[in-house]
Length: 182
Image (cartoon, rainbow, N blue to C red; front, top):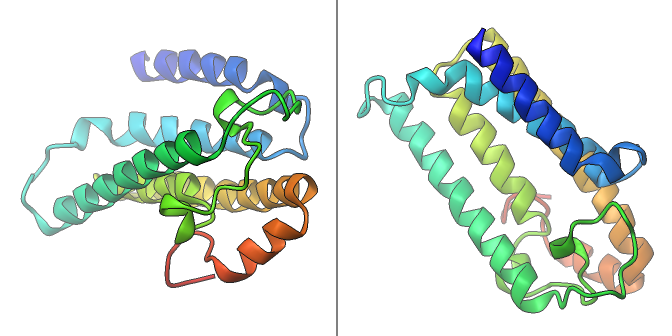
């Protein structure tokens, strides 16, 4: 009952912070809302198992994925803030302030990955899943991954619309989610 209440409270919060995206289903923020929902459910499902068998192989892999997630999130946020020059030039109402970059960010972690923030959430989802693998967790981690892929595709369309050919050039040379893949 407590978990259901927490999930409901988190859902209301996510809906509030996503309100501008939720009325624009073709934006990356629309998909991101469902990522947050899946992650919240995954945390609530597996949260009580975070320290089960702390040095077991599964837990060590889980913590490694969660640590990689944190590193990617910090590096991505730092690069956006340092190089993105967020400002009033971007008027899309569904964008958060940190997303309103007026310069195409191709330095820092963005030199190696187009989507470090989305990658961080993929690593987080699978790291949390490994805390206690099961069918429900697998479905939630897979849903988060699917919605992150959709969000990335829509984000790229938005970037192409704003940055034009410069984004195409960047995307052609920079992998999406992993430094050694597409």
